[in-house]
Image 1 (cartoon, rainbow, N blue to C red):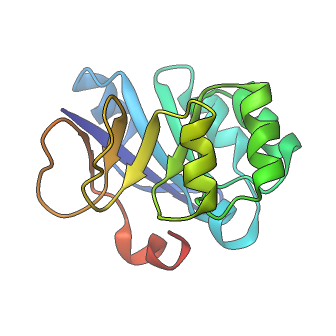
Image 2: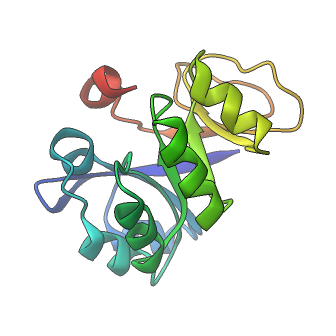
Length: 161
């Protein structure tokens, strides 16, 4: 299974194809990497809103405040990716608001707490050895039983994950 990746930078879609090409291909779900959010904490809600008219969105924007997390859903995200270094208190606030949290997979306290709280979806570039989870795989090659994120901008994102 695969999901196309759209990259947003400086308020514009910079990779991942055109809206027309995605619609023509019958795409229903899109993984959005918001580089402005990752780099400068400037979330592109306008882009989420326009894309959500046509697609179910998994948005990687690593919100650092509950208000940004909530606004991500208000503007069209179906799932929001949070970093594995999110403060535990904020993780609880996110999950109290919505179970539609995807966590960047790492090996630390926040991941353990996320699993303990019932979190079942991860973005990962390495195999994850946990039963009954959804993995959005951003590593090289294929990983059985995962959703491959096509054309993930690893060079642009590696320092944030």
